[in-house]
Image (cartoon, rainbow, N blue to C red; front, side):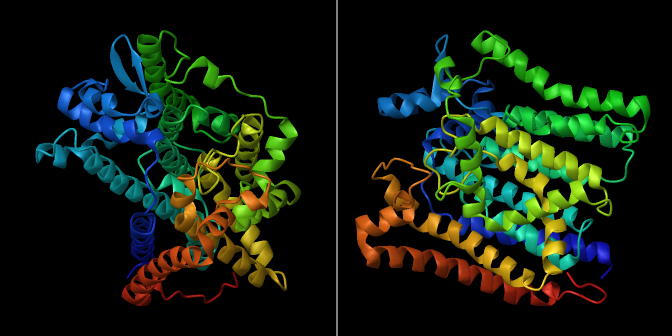
Length: 459
């Protein structure tokens, strides 16, 4: 089989594997925050509008404390959160709509949205592998893309229920895939620009994440002339312009959203606490949950210090993007991301870390203890997600405070203390057992395809 066809098949298999895990070993209850996002495509197809009045009976039956996920404006219902991903999902919802599934069968529609979400999150892993092959060996690209999928909130949050995060992550993953072969032609520049604008439509804070990358692409030699520059500007403007028009028409201002002003203006965390906490807080820090991401730190430092990293300019831009996003959320009152089994606030930036992770992989693997440390980090990262899946639902029912700093308030320890060692062991055994079984089935089914040629490579 030609190398390109082999790579395409491997990308597909990685996506299918992760999609299966996201579906079958992610049996948490859905978050009520994003229920309207999963129902919006049905409303679009059945009523032909962007309001959710068709779900008024469902809304009326909700307890008052659960109605916050909808907003009512001029007598019409709308999702509180950004719903660009809902519009992208409309074609996927068409078959069950045409089959006559009842509109108010919300359990079915939420489940249908979960299927789509798992597929999209799996596709983000496939894209990570495809892009990663430019930066490192086949083994490194496979391993690091899997770690991105199984060792972060890709699995436990992004791939769990239809939400704006999965749309943003997929857009950024596509951008990383396309940013190759400078200077970019006008067609590629338009595509990158459109995806950047769509990422902002998915989650408006992504404008902070992608702003440094936009500046980098305007430097000489990045875009092929004025035609490409114009195409990029037009592409990046489309979705934000439509979003601004929608906000003005529905909420009265281009910058207004479904969030109340009181909810938006809550930037009261001390900067140092939020900045450091997002990295190392025992219950919420990226390096505490997914220590393999330290490879990105190693790779980013190398990109700034070494002239042998190619293309180091792009890696530097990616590092500035993520650093800016980290600083942006540092003062947010809920910088830890609320009651979730894994940190999610920065997840749109994870695809930008992949090239630096691969550079860090190469550096670490050249050291004596590098391979063992990477293995330990990988096991910890995946294990963190598994324990989150195992214990999270039972603990959430207790409505515990999410304390990012006190280890005894971690969901695992709360579960152990409240339900006992037997119940905790049973929950972990069920989760790990299903994970192991699915992994074994995929390995056996694809082991010939999984056999890699390491000739001429050391990493």
